[in-house]
Image (cartoon, rainbow, N blue to C red):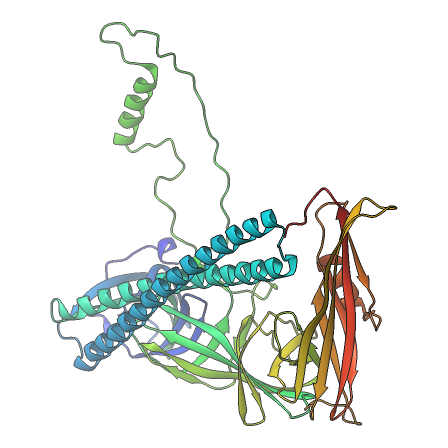
Length: 545
């Protein structure tokens, strides 16, 4: 470590030795670069030049094989002329980021306008509902549908605004870094680099080798996936890729590349709570002429001690971060790519391949008729690869057809997960309300009731993931209302088919009130599900949603 070795002033006659980057470990926001060099002799003063300005001096480690390192010094050097190609590349990257930021600003303005519009619709609908209640013409179903739609859209809008803000913040940081680097290249017609001077002592013939590890910022990676399903969705070809980017000021040419989820910039040690001291002060107490209040006297004494080099704190300045090494203790995931890669120092990412595999899946159809008129194909699969699948975006294909984007959650090897494979146009679903009635209390009860009933109609015109006889099994999912008051009774009534009894469906019903039916739809035919929901409550009260 730089801060644990004695610094020795080395002569200007140090022998300059060539070096190359051998390996790079990329983290989510930084990268650990390993640079190697060969020394012709085991003793002498050597200089490794041209190190990037972006390296962190507090995270620098040097290893010498075949000799002993007795002194080191990291020097700063200004190079008079910046390569014109590098300046032009920085300007193009800066312009591209500024355009991207402008697009995000336009998106932010649009999202804010949409939010205001949705809020106005919600207020208007609420006022109309209140007027209808007063006149006795209220439709609980219509009010509930409108409220559910507006609430869902407002939630989606707020989520999009948060993501937009995060993207703008990330772009702002990248823009600042690029402007700083471009300014360093153009302000004085040059740019800054670092040189490492080494004092090495050894015995015997032959030379020695040096390995230098240092952290650089403005680098990172994120996972991307290609999912290519077969026509029957019983197997999926998974291509695991990664987008890697870096603007450290030096190109990584033909290097061994590792991708890690560790975050060395956080350090290895978390914070500890600090003691808090309280004292009492009586403002009515008058100090004698010329006397100094006790609290002020403490301040005077503290300043006097600090002037002599003492402090009441263990360390006034934050300690430099310790060198962060990645260990295999289950705290992070690290991928070593099979071949050497080249990653240029630029704003645009480079796409690399982590691996490819085929995953067997069990296809199933799912629909939510209340919200959507499509029947969606999913594959339930197990991660049989050796890789941990990290959260990321997947491009989904069925054969050569691109179906759209989907998101993948973290999946460990051997863990089951769900692959979203798009909507099947050969299947259709229709939801028709048959009953919408309000029942008042009678002779034997003082409760009122709301009774709603629906027909779910499914058609199969050649499902892709069909059974041998061409039929398709579709899981129909509906959310029943749930009461926040024990006086509200909710019943599933007049269902023409029993709900599915699998463990995952049972859990959904108990925890979220979601009921699932398994409906077999014959080839070139249709199937129908009928069910109703009855909600009873004290007649003097009203149901709100």
